[in-house]
Amino acid sequence: MTQQPPPQSPQPPAGAPEPPESAPQPPEAASGHEDASQQTAPLWYEQTQTLAQPQFPAYSPVVPQTPTESHPAALTQPGAKPAQSAKPRRLAEAAAIALVAAVLASAGTYAVTRTDVAAAPATPARVSSTTSASPVVQANASAPNWSVTAGAVSPSVVAITVTSSQGGGQGSGVIFDTKGHILTNNHVVAAGGAGSKLTVTLNDKRTYDATIVGTDPSTDLAVIKLTNAPDDLRAIALGDANAIKVGDQVMAVGNPLGLAGTVTTGIVSALNRPVTTSDQQQQQQQGDPTQQQQQTGGEPVVTNAIQTSAAINPGNSGGALVNANGQLIGINSAIASLGSSGGSSSQSGNIGIGFAIPVNEARSIADQLITSGKATHPYLGVSSKDGVVAFGSAKRAAAVLTNVVSGTPADKAGLQANDAIIAVDGNSIDGSLSLVAQVRERSVGDKVTITVLRDGKSKDIDVTLTAKPASTP
Image 1 (cartoon, one colour):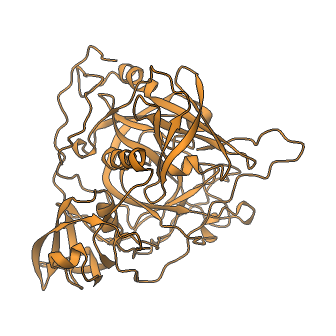
Image 2 (cartoon, one colour):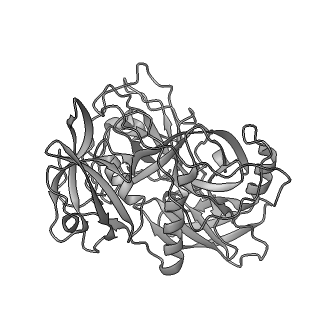
Image 3 (cartoon, one colour):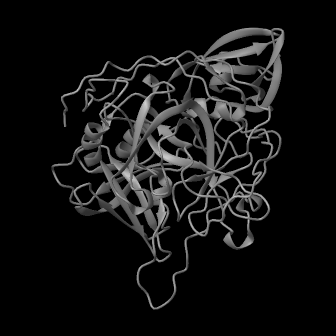
């Protein structure tokens, strides 16, 4: 989301609100469940104003995480191919680059962390029952006609403006249905703080006021609704994030830096990329913001993200990541930028590493927010830490359970303390953060197969996820 000047006033603007910061966390989580992740590694941080050039080398070792869990066009293209099976990644403690990142909002800056930089494995496809028909059928899958894709998708992507006494900002959103519901990031609508005003500009430049239907800070998603919505809205076609694979060509559509209707293309760089975002307190006057981390409360966002090379920048938050057939596969929410050292702030903007919330998760949360104004989340009932365990004649990284809460799905399924989780539904797990991301991506009632190493032997355990208890932090 990009910064906008405050409404005209005889007094100078107060400046963008300072995003909260994240503090280092204890070596183990104490809450005893997968969704109370309160810990972050070195932050990928972005400022959207007064950015200095990075100092090199801009790298530092990554501290291990220990969170707990949790239109039609005349072209043709074959259907989506199933994703590849998961493969173990290199150990999390291997030399890793500490990148700096940003959720794409200037009035509400977020930080993104990752325990390593190894490419995430492709995953077995899970069938989606709510995939929309493709608005575009490409004739040549290896050389998509992006002009046709852009023409089909752009009418379904909007620019969102937030105004408040603090100045507000701009972001993006997608038209979720023809009733006027817009899906976007929570940090976009929260950028202006209490009492802010939301306006939405369609691709044809018509502008409407909007109100918040519901927000879900733990997934960084929100739904707003147009006031007096027109009857000619074009809802975006929903795809299936489980059908994509690394190397697939994609397009990002949004409102970067206030340039509404911008489209960029790239590829899917990685899948199942566990990233976490948390509110950060921006300290522009004191040099490197990564040295001023302070957790201010609230549950960090943990996303099993799609990583893409498509150029996205501040203001793309809440916009669309689509496949060549014009189907939504993700909600753009964060970018990485080069880290900094020596007292200079990070370099903001696209460097070819962006992250999107998978559409399957976004669709589930949006449906719940529209129906009830709030969302429930899946619950496993464990605490975990990063660990390295014996794996045959080798070793591998895993999420080692430190506690299994009595009466929870994990307990009922037979998970035990000291079990080393190495996969969920065949998706490789290399630490606590990836376990949290895998659980949070799923829905209440989902049955998952958890692969553990116990006493040197591999064991598959089926667990049915329940709703996270309201009293659970």
